[in-house]
Figure 1 (cartoon, rainbow, N blue to C red):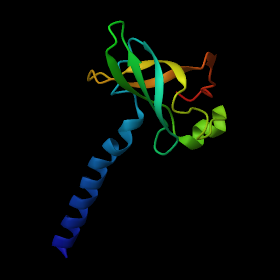
Figure 2: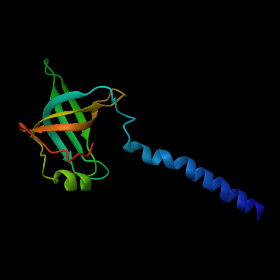
Figure 3: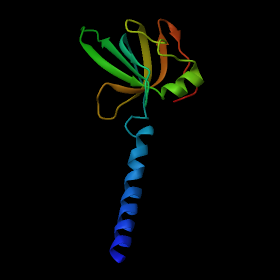
Figure 4: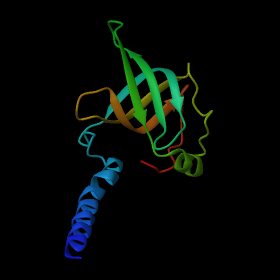
Amino acid sequence: MRQHSLAFILSAVGLVATAPPAFSHHGTAAYDTTKTVTVSGTVTEFRFANPHVLLFLESKDEAGNVTRWVGERGGPNSMARNAGWTSKTIKPGDQVTITGRAAKNGTPTMAISKIILNGAELSMGGND
């Protein structure tokens, strides 16, 4: 009986210890919150799916070098409800300018705070 109680307690402690990392990806820890970046380019893919809406684009610098960026927003349910987005809001070939917080690890990834789509600003619905 004592062994079963000890096993239960150890299992419970293990579960509690691993729970915070499971929810931590919703924070801003992966992004540099001290500065914003702005990138313009052509949309290559738009994923209106859980857990986050993702926008893929190709951006060219002055020398013509292409960088493939990935921008993320909230979940599709939240973006639909708060900003009126659908799976057809952004399409491959669209021209966008995105502004947000770039990844701390230097990868071309960003938490998007603003999108200019074909010259017009999209609603973000207050969901950062």
